[in-house]
Image (cartoon, rainbow, N blue to C red):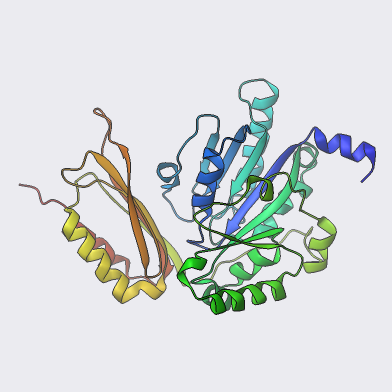
Length: 335
C-alpha cells in the first residue's frame, strides 16, 4: 500500500460484514460488540429473512449506536439497492453533522451469500470512495455446521468469503467433532484464521480494524465477483410470522414449542421471538436453532406500551398452519 492510499483509507469509514448461517450467534456477537467499552461509535445495518424483524428487541443498546433494520428480503437479493440507499443516507447525515458514527457493521440474514453484499462497495463509486470494506466475519455453529455445509450453498459461500471464521457452540460438541469441522473449514477457506468463540466473547481487535478484505484473494475464489448476477434461495426454505396482542399461557406455550421441536426440529433452521406472557411484567426473548432453544427475560413492558408477541420461524417445508393453530391454542382464551 502506498502512503497516498494509506492516507485515503484513514479518512474512510470502515465496514464489517457479519455473516453466518441461521442460529450461528451473529446477534450474540453483535450484542457483545455494542456493549464493549471500546470507544467506537457504530452504525448497525441488520437484515431479517422474512417479513418481521425481532432483533431490535434482542439487541441490547449501548446508547451510541444507530440501528437500521431491513426486513423486506435478503440483503444480498432484491434489496441490495436498499443497502446502497441506506449507506448513502448515512453518509449524507454524517456529513451534515446530523449523526455521528466511526464505523458500520452490516449483520446479514443467515441465508445471505456475502459476496453480493461485498460487491456493493465496488460497484458504486460514491459508496466505494466513502466506505472501506474492512472484513467479512463469518460465524459457524459447531453443532450444526457440518449439516449446514452439506445442505446449503449459502453456508459454504459464507465460509469461502470469510476473512475471519469464529466457531461458536464448541462446548456442545466433542473435541474430535470440532476438529473435524475445523479441518473442513480450512479446506474451504485456507486463508481465514479460525477462532473459537463462546457467547460472543472474542477480542474486539480480532473483529474490527483488521483490514482483512482482500479483493485479489476474493477474485481467486470467484473470478466473476465484480459481475452482476442473480441469487436464488432453495425454495424449500421459507419463513412465517405469528403475532398476537393476547398473552400466552407460559406452561402451555413451553409444552407446545417442545413438541414442535421433537417433531420438526431438524427442519427448524432458526426461530426467535419476543413473547408476551400472562402475569409477567417483562417481555421474554427466545431463540433457537434445530433442537436447541433458550429464553431470557427482556426489558420490562412500559405502562403505556402496547404488548404484543412476535414469533418468527425459518425452516424447510414447515407446516405453517399447524404452527399457527397450535400457537393460538396457547394464548389466554377470551372470557
